[in-house]
Every structure is written in C-alpha cells, then in structure tokens.
Length: 387
Image 1 (cartoon, rainbow, N blue to C red):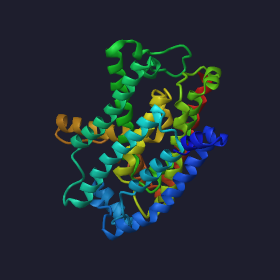
Image 2: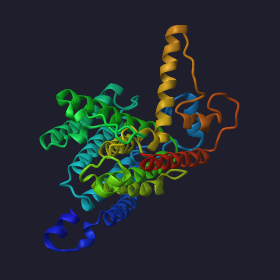
Image 3: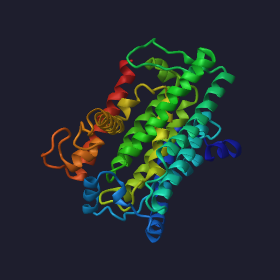
Image 4: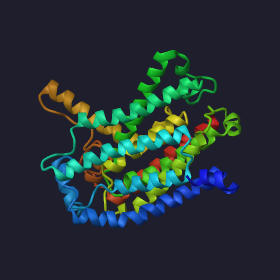
C-alpha cells in the first residue's frame, strides 16, 4: 500500500528499496503485535479461553504442564500475531505481486482454519478441536486453491520455471515439471501441497513449549527472506548459479514481517508464557514458511532450513506409525522414543530413547532448539555457494 501510494503521488525512491521495506515491515509487525497483544490477551483471559492441559497429549504430559502452571493460560494468541503480520504486509509489500498476493491469501485461509480449530477446542466441551480429517480438508482446500492459481498463472504467462524443481548440490540439474504439460503441473501442485501442508503441521506440532515455535520461526523466516531476495535478483542468482524467479524478492518483505510479528508475539510468549499461539498462529505460519520455500525454489532444501520443525514432525510421525504397527502386530503398542515429539521427550524425560535421564528445563530445551534452528539455517545458506 505505502509503496504504491508513493509511486502514484510522489517520487520518494527510498520506498522502492526492498531492504528498506523489509526493515519497516519487521518493525511495524513487531509494533502491531505489541499494540494488539495486551488487549487480546486480556480479552481471552476475561472470556476464560485458556489452555485445557488435559487435551495436550498423554496423562504424563498433561500432569507436567499443569505442574508448570500452564493450565488456564490464554491461547489463540496466534490471532493477533497473524493480524500484525498481514497488516504489515499490506502496508509495506507490493500487493500487485503475484507471490505476495497468493501468500496473503494462503496465510489468511490457513489462519481461518486454525481459528476455527482453536475456537471449537476452547468452547465445545469434550472436543479437542475439529476432527483431524476436517482440519486436513480445510488446509488442503486453501493450499490447493493457491497452488492451482500459481500453476494457472505460470501456464498463462509462459513462466514454466515457476513449476520446476531444483535439487541442491547440482548446478544444472532441473526437474522441469512446468514443461511437461498438464501432468507436470499436477505433479508440481501435488508436491507443493505436501510441502505447504506438511510445513503447517510441523509448526503446529512444534508449538508446545514457551517460545519454541515463535523463536524458531524468526530464524527460519530470516533465512527464507534471504533466499527469496537472492532468488529474485537476476545478478545475484546468476553469480550464485541458482534459479532466478522474477519478482520473488518481494517475498522478502513478507518474511521480514514474519520475523517482526513473531518477535512481538515472543514478548508475551517467553517463559513463563502469558499466552499460547494455538492453531490460529502455527498453521498459517507453517503454511507461509512452505510457500516462501516454493517461491524461492528451495522446496528440497526446506528440511534443512526448518530443521527443528522437521525433527518434531518426523519424531511424532514415527512414534505414531510404530505404535499403530506394533499394536496391530503384537496386540500392544510400542514406542521408539520416550515421548514424541522430541521436545516433549527432552522436557519430560531428558532422554530421547532411554528413560531415567534428568529432564531438561523447559527454557534449556527451547534455547537449544533455537541453536539447532540457527545451525540448520546457516547450513542451508551455505548451500547457496556450494551450488
């Protein structure tokens, strides 16, 4: 909005620089989150929309959460986080950019799904939110709508490279799905759907300890902003021999807004948390993370960029799958990890595979996971030069 206004009514070149608008988007998103956070938390507390720890997982985890004083802490804090993010994006990013436009639609859509899930969980007795199948349908409808529009735009404008995949470590290797006609476009949409929905669920699962998901998202958002900025610069992408995506740099403004909004939310979510994120924040943040990877053509590098989220998602999936398999085969379910996802195992047991170790303090788990997230982000950025 602001860049377009100055382009129309004045000649202030400063607003044309993406780096300046990135800084402004981060600062405004942070300010909006601080501004709106306190009254939203007060309203949530007044309405008694607090966390029911009996619904968070196993009885052992619920008891630990209650002992840590988490019972009754307001949740759905993601609502003001996402509002701050979108408000800043609408102010400082170019909304006529197709990547930004679809990113805003994706974030708002996934935010609505998460809000409904949180609302049902908090207001309907005995419900842990909407049914998993219903949640998956909601996530899929939003993601497929956005990806379908991207595929249509790519085909109509001759930008088939938007639908290509670029494996890391190889300079010339490209999987040109966009050039393979309708089947190629469908294959890309299916793969990108997996990236976006998987990312949404990964952040959702990681949102379990004070400051964990928000802090990791700051690191991942910064890393993806760099990828988007470099990918959108023809000179830099040519020098680094990475795919060039026209106008992808504008998504760096969105990534900066993610960092600012998450820092503002972290102000209230730091241990001991005044508010929890809930699905209304974790699902849209995860989906937007996946979308930025799709825009920057870093879908195959995303597991390294988002290392902590992948660790939590994979350990949770492995635990559930193994438990179900052994229950069918042996009549009783067996576990690989002491507790899943992995951050809960360290918080509850201290050991991932063997019980009896000294449990880690919640703050220690969170800070060490931030370190792991930073290492993954630095490793992924190193691939820019390796390629």
